[in-house]
Image 1 (cartoon, rainbow, N blue to C red):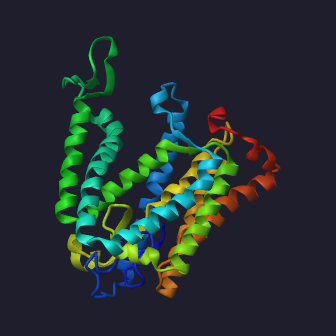
Image 2: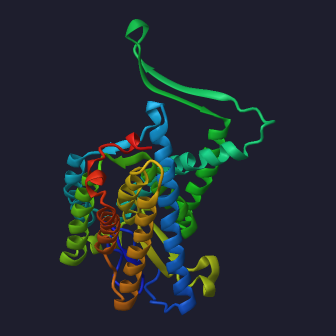
Length: 352
């Protein structure tokens, strides 16, 4: 589901695009400076949603508003996820084999157009609250849709929003139209970062064991579908959606019109975040485990990029990220004599 790719190599195994899709079939050989800039930018973009999303996730956990509470991933959910992901991936593979790629991607573009606007709007909301001029009126609105009448009336939709939300929605819509019409890499990254930030903010683990189950299953899933079959590569060649972060390796030569991309699947961000976010809450007065996991993620992703660049072949990043993100904090807990305590925490909200 997730990997790091250099577009002069095998197509992205996460369904994140391909040479042909991104107009890079000419196999442009980038300069060392352009390659370093692309890899560094991917790493930086990957760290942004992990760091800020984890902090916002803990903030949501402290909230007394039930609607702001993040969803909890249980051990059962974690065990099922690789199976569900495999079925989804293989289903997409069959769809692209049977039906027209053009029409499927048209439907996907409309679907992610709506999701991207909502995700980007939600991401911008806290920032808009800080910059919105205090002297401008912030009117309140309500969208209410009911069914029935009288005592049998039932609310179907009850959504409250204000002027700031409308501004965020308007800006997000402009980005959405830009993405649909041009498929520009900057618009893709804006949507991708919004998806990642929302994902890391709104989902969290209920214990460390669940994180080990989830990442362990995805480790096997990623390695199998990348190295064991051509399913991911086939889907990657056909799938067009902002479910990856991209950065052009020929930016220095071609500017914003560059087209030779290095890519990172959002799955590499989201799945490792769940473990990192939990470690942020393991200790009440220290963030040692979180910073250890954060450095481990940097090490794992850097190792992925190094191996990919050396062998010129797309890599399943979870092959390197899972051992690093799980192994480093577990070894730290073992060294500090807190391994039992680490695995006994059942809900991070009890520790913050």
